[in-house]
Image (tube, rainbow, N blue to C red; front, side, top):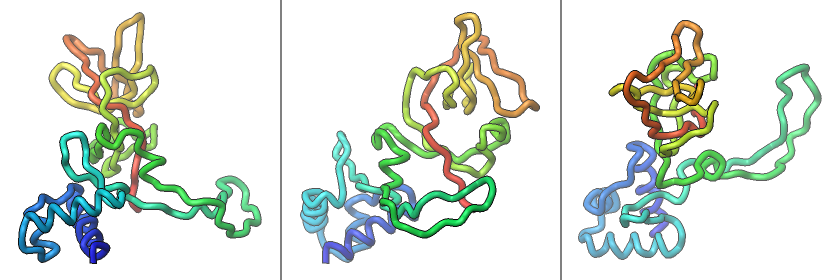
Length: 188
């Protein structure tokens, strides 16, 4: 029974990109009291099927689940290949270092197209206040937010687009890094 409840909770998460509240869990599972929901959640947490963050909020143990790795695909000249399951990987573990510090942002604009990031993509961003030169960052510069390469010139930080139609951004007053981009998700 808990398995079907878990499935409903995770379906809610996948459709809304947030975990349901206890009241919403009551609605989607048909449980009649918050105490019943609390007990269900505690069982799922004990079994490792759900987690709680530092503040006690529910988080899924995986978002994308595990997927089989079948081998390599040639991106150059065609080569013969046989399908063989080499391993499996959790995309969450591959893409997300620190779940509590990670979030998704939908990309708007084309200033990072030459880095392979285009409008409509989702970027996986990990909160950070510092970045290494050359990392793609989410930053506030002079009161506006943007995603660009973090660069240094003569000891001063600036932001560089990955599209020659745009000029680098040199802050007049302030440049604050909010996150470092860790991955890109594109749906075809």
